[in-house]
Length: 103
Image (tube, rainbow, N blue to C red):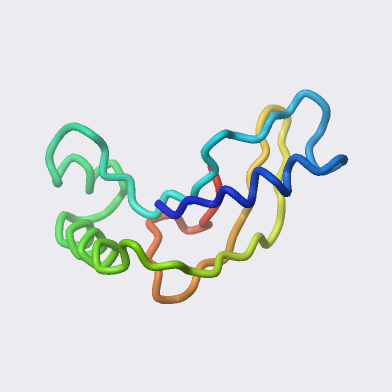
């Protein structure tokens, strides 16, 4: 994951979120969900990847661990009970989600 604490500060600005919405305490982009239990095969299936794709993506992300990247918020999407920030990532950062977003 990429931690994005700056998102909370932006979302706390008056008028960004509807009344009753609260920003999360730990805003981040999930790049690949590994899960705490189970096998690589189960995690790959949960992510919609083959086992090889999952293992390659995890290895690529492990190589990037500890580096800093610029992440840009492209838009804020607000639905009835949830708000989400759609972001753009550098091309060198793999993400399992077709639309990278802050959760």
